Length: 154
Image (cartoon, rainbow, N blue to C red; front, side, top):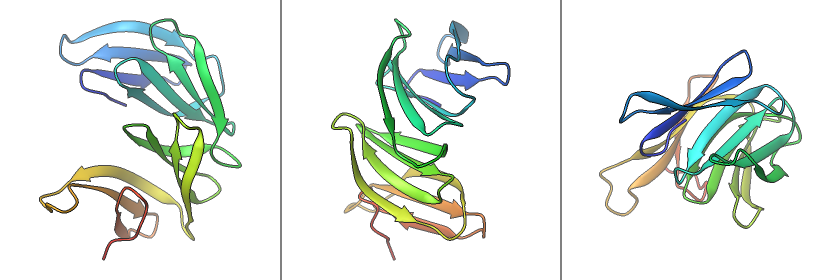
């Protein structure tokens, strides 16, 4: 997905394009070295976080293409990921939504769902007490808001 100026595009053939949305050009073509990727994110304009069909989430250096870290957030694969600062909010095929601190390599909180999540985004709101919220939509078409500590909002 994106940071401030670059997005990652994962292609079915195993290639990943690093595309600069300001200059309208492909900066780099990467070859997937791991399982089929379902989730790719750019962090701090220098790291790539990937999640795919295996249970591992990986952090790569975009410039050197070297693996920096590998860890398991779910018992199976990740299907959705959003990031904020050092946190990964990941939904997996185990029907759990997990907040993972990738710098400390710790799970901060995990929630179980009866139906799969089909979409999730961090949204900015006009609420002065809580500018950012995690919006989650389940397969049952239910929209739910959480704070960034994964506490349910009413």
